[in-house]
Image (cartoon, rainbow, N blue to C red; front, top):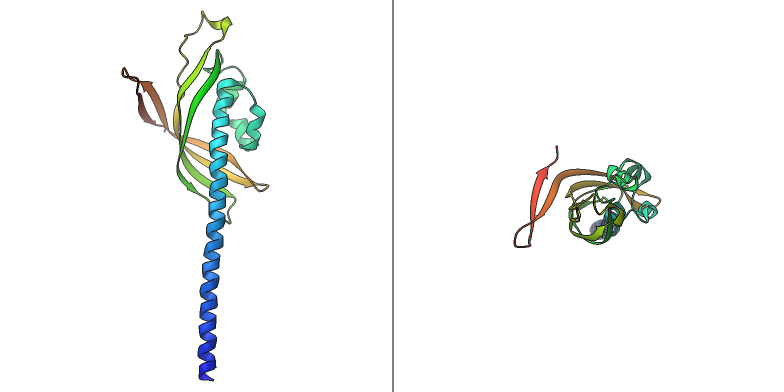
Length: 188
């Protein structure tokens, strides 16, 4: 009887250990899967947002990446689509976009994720619209980048950006040597 009890506890202990390890593997798999999906949504969605603000084209594609509540409340998008943007007088042909994800966390059982990103657009190319040549500068305004806290929600099996709060403003200015200088300003 004593050997049977030891054998039973040995098997039970190993089964518990195997279950814990399998649980950790499953949890890690879903965290990695959520992280990869969020990474793609952030990179493609934020770049598409900048593209729509600069060019005012294909705004309906933002629905793939952003929740409808966010799109309604985004002042930069609203200004661009209403012609009130600093880029309305320019025909933008291209831009360089950089997004750095500093922090990303999504529990596998949660439908919300939080992350911190740094967005920069170091260069924008284009020209003034011909009807506005005499009224505006030939120099395209620089993009005001920044550090953002972004909240994503998982709805219908798809991650979408639902909130974005700017923590700092990154102002880029070209130096005399041509290199980019970056100034960081805290947003209250």
